[in-house]
Every structure is written in C-alpha cells, then in structure tokens.
Amino acid sequence: MKLELPDPPRKLRQLAFPLVAPTTPLGVEPRPKERRTGADYDTEWARSFRARWTRTVLLESVLRPTAAAIARPRRRGIDRLADLQDAGGPVIFCANHHSHVDTPIVLTSLPEPWRYQVFVGAAADYFFRNRATGAAASLLLNAIPIERATVTRRSADLAAELIDDGWSMLIFPEGGRSPDGWGQDFRGGAAYLARRTGAPVVPIHLSGTDRILPKGAKRLRPGPTTVTFGDPIRAEEGEDTRRLATRIEAAVAALADEHTSDWYAARVRAHTGETPGLGGPDGPSWRRAWALGERSPRRRRRAAWPPR
Image (cartoon, rainbow, N blue to C red; front, top):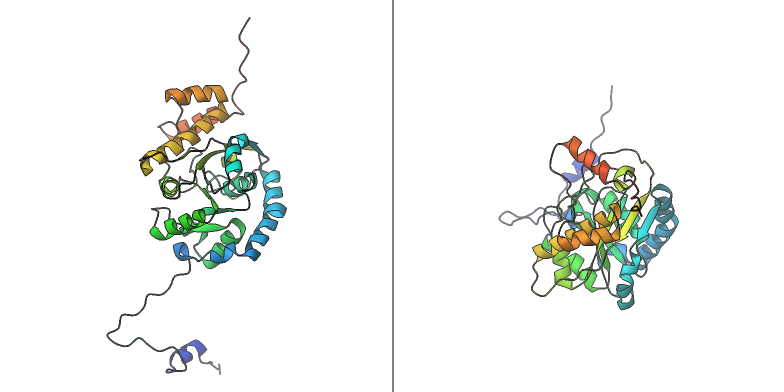
C-alpha cells in the first residue's frame, strides 16, 4: 500500500490568519503584485561600493583579457575626446549594434574617467527577463532596464537621474542587434536624454563584431574588430529629439564610411550629404549580403598611387 503524504503548501494555505497572511476584504481592490523583473527590476544595489569594486575587478581581470583574445579591438578616434576628458562630466556613448560582444568591447575601450563610471541601457525584456539574468547584467555591466518599444517614464527618469549624478551612459539606439549585418533606424532615447540632461553625445562605430557572434549564432568566431570614436555632438538651441537622433545616426554612418574608405573621402561625402546610410541597399537578402561583403575593408583593394 502506497502511503500518500499531504501537500504542505496546500495545507498551509488552508490555515487561517494570523498563521498566514490575511485575505483581502470584500469590496476592497487588492494591491497589484509588485514585479521584480523586466523594467521594474531594481538596480540600485549595483552602484554600491562593493558592487562597483567587484565590477572593476571583473572588468580588468575577465572582460578585458577576453575581449582582447576574441576580438583584438583596434581603437581609433580617442583623441577626439580630449576636450571632454579635460572638461569632465558625464557623456552619452551611442553605438551601432550587431552582437552581444558589442557591450564588453566598448566598455573595455572607453578611456578614463568614463570606463569605471558608466552604466549600460539594456533591453528590459531580454537582460531582465528573470532575476538571475538581471542580477548578472547589473553586476557585470552596471546595466539598467530600458524598454525597447518606447522610452517609458520609469526608464527615462532613472537614466536621467544617473546622468545628473555624474554617470556616463552606453546605449545602442537601434534597440536591438542587427539581423543581417546592416544597421537599423536609430530611435530617440539617446537624443531625448541628451536634450534633457545637456550631456554631450559621442557616436561610436563598431566593425567586425557581426562576424564574431551575429544574431542567432551559437558559437564564437574570433576575429579583429575596430572601435571608432567620433566627435562629440551637443543638442542645439531649439532642436527637437527627432532631428538630434537623425544627426547622431548620420555621425555613426560617417564613422562607418571612414572605416571602409579613409578619413578625407568620408569627410567630403559627409559635407556633401552623400554618406552611405547604415541600413544598406534595398533588395533581397542575397543582394544585401553581397553589398555587405563589398563594404568590408578586408575585401577592399588598396588604392594605387596615381601615375606620374
């Protein structure tokens, strides 16, 4: 004969107050359950002294050697940040987004003083889908949850508060990784925060990360990458969020053009409004893949000197 033991949780639920929590009286609307994941995840603990010290150790002992071994990042344009370094203050770093390796590569490429005083705007529905992933993202990356569909008041207020407190921000305005190696339209979150806080925006272009770990891939394929920093951008008097977001996207596109050609030619095209967009050509997937290969600097022929 099989002995069946009672279900303790069910028996406990049958007990009465005060042995268990009281029920909600009739006629009283019950309080909504407090969410602890997604956009409601609390990341304040990740900026405590102990968490910051742990993150610094992990950044230098784990992330930096790993990024160097997998991506071998080449960093360009850091001299363009000299005036910001002298002035001090928080900065909003905006980069294109192809891979999960983008964040550690940028974080380990940031010069001081921003490297240890920066937080990351991360997708609430991905990195904060449960408490385990939320804790890992908060501790390793100092990430805060950002709604991808739209910038909610909670996300915007938290990001603006941290920027006002002296924290710099790393954000990927595309809202998600590229599905095919080409860029996506920039959303207005970074531009909104720049207008609200007055912090300058530094455009960043990442190249090569789409070959290391593209969206949907399961395995890493180590290879060289390039991180190019652009000139700082500030919101102009009376400029709206949409126009500023367009300028930020154009600046990242100009950095992409600079990477695949040369600085002078890229500046000429930027001046005449002929910079190729980040989105690539319209057409079927094979045509876009072909054009992406043509854009790769590894396939670009070295320009020959003109004949004498």
